[in-house]
Image (cartoon, rainbow over all chains, first blue to last red):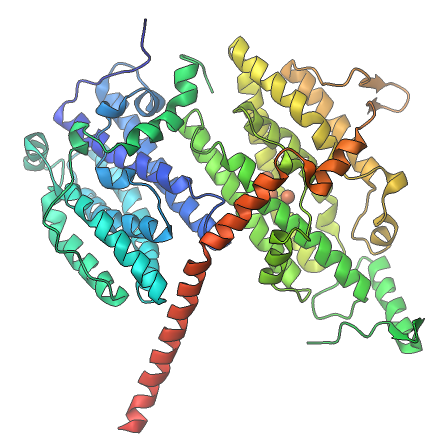
Length: 258
Length: 338
Ligand SMILES: [Fe+2]
Ligand SMILES: [Fe+2]
Ligand SMILES: [Fe+2]
């Protein structure tokens, strides 16, 4: 029996690109699930906008990853033919949409990291990554602004919205630390000026989150425990279902053009 | 707000026509005949307002409900390019809904009211969206055929006598024709693909063809609104005329794909230059309109669920805006109090 699955030989640079690409694709996929079901028409449009930006970022990054891999694979091979264990996204982005509060909390946590991260990456010594970053940082600035405004409305809205949003924050908070984790391979790229150390983004992340939570009258959970493992392919149960949807046609019709 | 209800007064059950009203009505019709655009603050007969509100809001509802069948496939789109294009397309439909609700609001009915009419089942939306999307090819077929039929209906509406509707339609039509080309391109890719993909495309055409012909509405012999709408230049072609235009434009496109239409009577008539087609099953159309199509209940339930699930969000947004306004007012009052 043959398989349609692929595995990549992950050099430090390829691993980095896959982490960023998978974060973008899975977050975009989750956001796209809202389309047609948002709390108001304007929000259907806004969430689709953010999802489109994420999918667009993922495509540029997969394209670069395919070039680095050098075997003639395409962006679609990378998105549609890797199994759960080969995906490198952090666990935060694969968490379910939940109610609108969970989606907004997830987005604020992700964007509070991604926005300063991509801004810093515009100075990457790798010209392709610098170019991707230059486009991404404009998009992430909007993602952060839009989701932070919602977090403030929901936190400082009605008692019900406050309660739902605090609950979502309590649920998702343990996943935020993984955004700022890295490993020896990434450290090598940081020394070469190709990558930004995710840990170096921590002060900006903390400042943004603290400011938004204060305005939203929400409390950052004290929980010291952390969830992680996505960067080495140890995911939550949710990713398998995402990929079952995402990959089904490519898997059912190997080699077909769509 | 100018008065809306005084065009024809009912006295003892008999309409009494005021001569001043009659003169206004004649002036209004003269403007329409001169291809003048009617704008929101202009006087208009009550029937004109009612007809347009119904038509524009139904059109808006169709855009919104139409997001659901296609939205089904966003998470399963077979390539990243297709996923982005489909997401952008469904987002466009949400935008169309928004412009159309805004156009209808200029006639004096609020979006909340129109939403309420949709969710309570009093307002209609296009019958086509009560059919299921079963395979990826349905996304191609919807773009090619459903958006294609929408364009046939909507191009003449760019010249509709009501200004806000006509202007909304110009923008909408540009996007619909992009959707139509994109859908056709999906079909073309499938038809040039594997035998399974081609079969998928054929199956989609088989299922969508007749419901698309029904999108133009009942035959002229049975249509109720057409005469007055034509006089008001809301509708410039009859249902049957538009349906024929659609068939004539679409059949050659389908043949180019190498697909067959599910109509043994479909044949080109040399004398008239038209494609002649078989009899539409109007009973099916009536059933779908009456709520008995394959997905009517599901679509309405999804819309109601989304609206209900979003209620706390909308309340929060309002409560927060009020808090902000109050704080701003308090801050402004502070120096005087000090
Ligand atoms: Fe549309
Ligand atoms: Fe439309
Ligand atoms: Fe469309």
